[in-house]
Length: 311
Length: 311
Image (cartoon, rainbow over all chains, first blue to last red; front, side, top):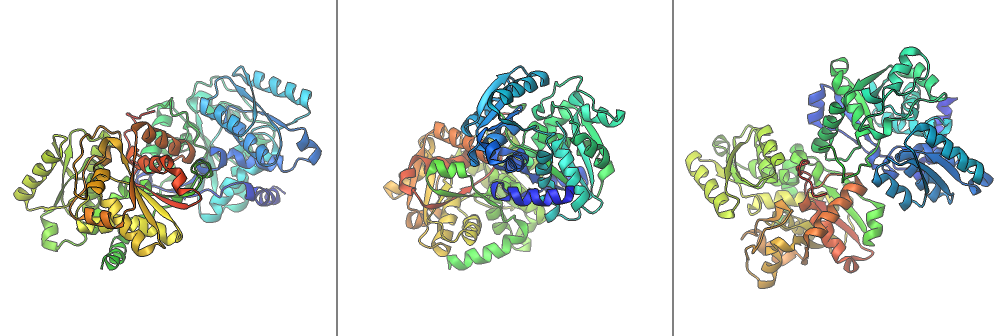
């Protein structure tokens, strides 16, 4: 069922997304001691993989639903993705953004003609503001990481990666709200050959690590991380998938995130956001476990504020 | 003759270089009013197109010459390229670098096991230091932009671009010492279909613009530009090629260089150095002249000092 949904989802969104390139670096391979394949969703439309899930969800709304618009809350990448996806399909996008969102992500939403509603940078404020807009406008709420159609859409990045590299032994993703890793885990399960899936998560926002340990969804105790896309928590749709199909979560320090980000920028000459660097940081931290393997990494996005870099 | 040299040079260096990807951005196309294809030599080994020319030159040395090493002077990218090319072939590389070279480029040379000799940041000091080393060690001098084999090697980037995009109407390159634009102009002449070639040059180092006007090689009056790769002047081997085959040089301000660099970083999510951004800045400055065309841009390199960015 999920397999068919992935196949149908990929066909559905294909005309609206890029099949992004897969890059590698011999220097990084040498450093990791493995063959690493980076699926570059920083080159995706809107600058992040989120375009996949947003488009898959919007394309399944009825004409009547589309006429009333969509509403979401996001610190940035899903906001841009919904705005861009909605714009392509002539749908109005109402976007709730925490006031702490990077300037470049707000600009992106405006460029794609989404309407921004700023709120306090807490999950409660984000959800209540989005609910209020949904009630007032009749817009359909799209959850950035827990909507089943969004999860399927996000999984299409790992699907494409496995189409080109059928023998990957492990795939790494960053873990924020859980949509990307749940979708990637489904893709690895149905399209990989015993392909394992690991998540990278900041120590400073380690809800997924603790949720897997306790067996129930845990909140974040802190969200004091540079990886601004990973401050959210798992949801009731993605957590069961993660419990079933994800092999482990590896936590990393802020220093490891910044040095992995710098490594990717300097050696691969591509711009990735801190959240993306978390996946490589996790692989580097436990590299002995993956020695000699073929490893895929989903580079989640490249929307950074150039005026506010950690270097 | 030059056509055969390009074909032979490309076959010769092929095993040692990447056939770099060609990227584009619908947002930049929209801004320029043309279809722009970026040949991404920032993804080349060593982080710049210079690897092509260096490898082509070193591969043509005799065994006896190789045993005595090579020597060059370069503000950075050619230094890394010669070090890396020489290292692959078991040759010693002596590299004269002006003391003003970016830290990241010095590190690159050291990583590739080249020997660095620092000198004053003037062309005179660079040349006299390199000559002295050549005399003392018997190393073969490689000129970064005027050596005929280097010029041919640099032309292979535009050759590859034209292999994938046969109908380009114009190619833009940055102009420093003239090796890249001379090689690209030969490639466009022999492998393009009436493909024009334009150079981008900073107002602050506009020797090529003035040389084409006066008909003889002019020096730089200032080199106060962020485009650290473009401070050198044309040579007696590349200037005749440039005079014959280059259609024009468009000069740009420092502000235009930084804003074009930022545009590429933000929209394309790739890291390019200021010298590379000069080519897009030139196209943007005179965009009405190229409206509706298919335009190639050779992105020369991506070796920037992340600790010293202009944003």
